[in-house]
Length: 168
Image 1 (cartoon, rainbow, N blue to C red):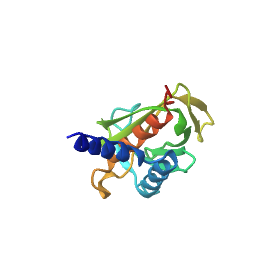
Image 2 (image 1 turned 45 degrees about the vertical axis):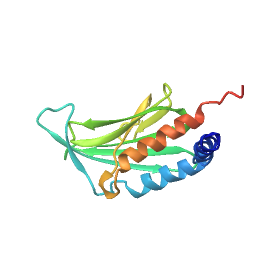
Image 3 (image 1 turned 30 degrees about the vertical axis):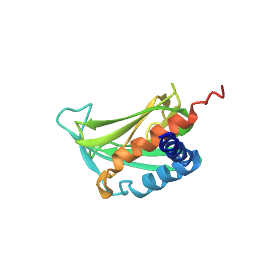
Image 4 (image 1 turned 30 degrees about the horizontal axis):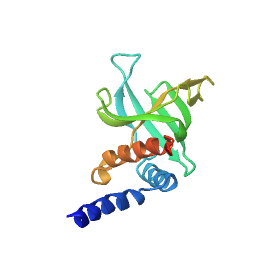
């Protein structure tokens, strides 16, 4: 009986020894973000927050490097007004991740929550700059089975890797 118990403990410990490293996780996230972006001409409809009877066309474009920086460009246009805003954030500042349904745009989105003011943004149309605490990750989710849940799991793994482990 002791041998079986010892074998089971060894199996569970050995499984945890092969958890992905930060670099492997960042590479996987980077590969998926770069592969499943909306294309430059893929816009989706979303009601205007400012004008109740108007619809904006949105495009979210992301790049992620293996050092853990995400760059996001959001473009929207209502035919008359066009705006481009860029966001930059380092994944080392990530504190939480959650999935939500953007009811206005009818899109499923992963919200990445960061330390206060960790997200830098700049509006190219009026040169405004600012700080934020979160960004939404709008990707084309239906090309791989369960991609959205796997992406959340990878981001949560990154958060867990950032927590210092006690040695005693």
